[in-house]
Image 1 (cartoon, helix red, strand yellow):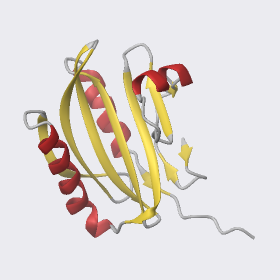
Image 2 (tube, one colour):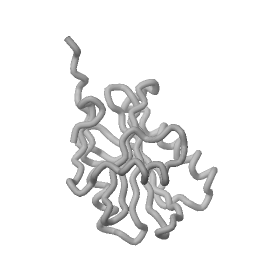
Image 3 (tube, helix red, strand yellow):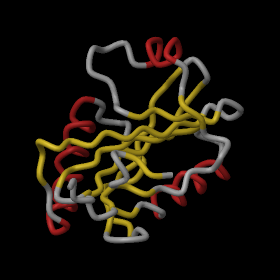
Image 4 (cartoon, helix red, strand yellow):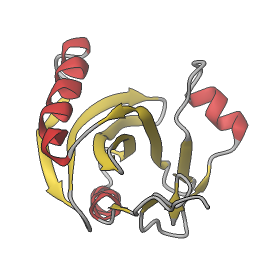
Length: 156
């Protein structure tokens, strides 16, 4: 799947579809929402993607950027951290990520926040699934490993 005017490739399973607007409004009740929100309705798993074109980032800054995001989340929710910030090699480059838990109506959720550079801009994503769903957690990691920035095409 190509996102953001074909700037980002991600290998998304076909079972992930765009979330309905009613569900988006219920789960994300704030004014500014993620640009792309996909879900696997059968499992309740989700992936979001937002490209911040006003926020530059170099490959060498990914590790420190995810460190700062992790610190903000753990200051707000001190006992939520499951996996400390780290980098993961992707199809191209590296992705910075960490995992934390939240509580929802469905029970405990395993959440991942991640940062990946796309043409010098920060792509910020989240993904999650039910805490006990080990197969789905691995699927989310595979999705993250598939990230690949595509060179921006010049407009003629």
